[in-house]
Length: 433
Image (tube, rainbow, N blue to C red; front, side):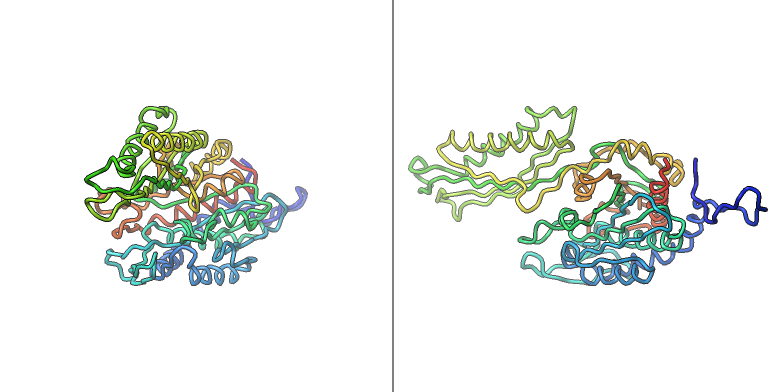
């Protein structure tokens, strides 16, 4: 395997003045050196969380760091995103590395010296703010990667683009498109040939790096249904059209789409109604009912099929009851399937094995959670990784799942994240794998 070296090769006829140093070795030393600072970066971001599209201080922190490394910086991308461009000393391809920056409206319950005490207004409510999904770790890791790669820029054959993205958790109402979708619209991937990203999870232990070809995380589409009936007295339901009983039939019908109409052996799918609003008192049949839910799939074709079947099922059931129904899918929030490019994964598998050793799993179980990294991977070949952050041997109860107010990270996991993204970038630029 061809390796990038740190010193120019001398002509054969000249005496050898120094033994070339493999970049892998330099990466190992640099990662070890930067690891304590990555912990500091992560803790700073953790202690100062900001909600989606409100990551102004986080973005400023990142931009200062990148500029201090001599990296070209563009701010205000997709409102609060930061794009850093590191040009290597030799011509070559362009690779992008992504970290999301936003926190969640969750009040932290973890006893840490750097725990968040931040508060903000979310949907009109005063809420606690916490990095309950690990985006603080993503920011810290990518800041460390930038530090390592900037120190060896003269030896890099190509360009590295650092994508510090806002609003992965979804934009506030009225601010879509946002996040990765808006970064793509604002040319953050211009000239990029491939993109890599990772996400920390307590599902796996420290030292584990996990991925899979094809669909890794689901598409996510918001579903909004309004059933229109005719108001009447509850003692005389025949005098109107009951949207509540119609909605009950619709909920049952939606479940049969997944259980009876989709081949679940080919791709998992979920249609869930999570909210129903209708009526004001016990003896009045209301005019309308609102239902809100989510649609999940791991295949783009199945996603389109679900949309069509949902519209048909809802409108047909409503019509059968003398009611009408409006169906809105996605609207301001809808993520495509996060799918890893099989060719890119096959090419980079040797790099991942070298980085993670026995901790590598290339056959991860897909999940029906969603990620807007999918927008990047829909534009150029992409590869997304799970990074384990649970202490080896610890129970699931000791490390609750992402989005919990008790979510926490074993920071020993961070160096593997830095090493993985750094080595992936270098080997991609070198054409290796």
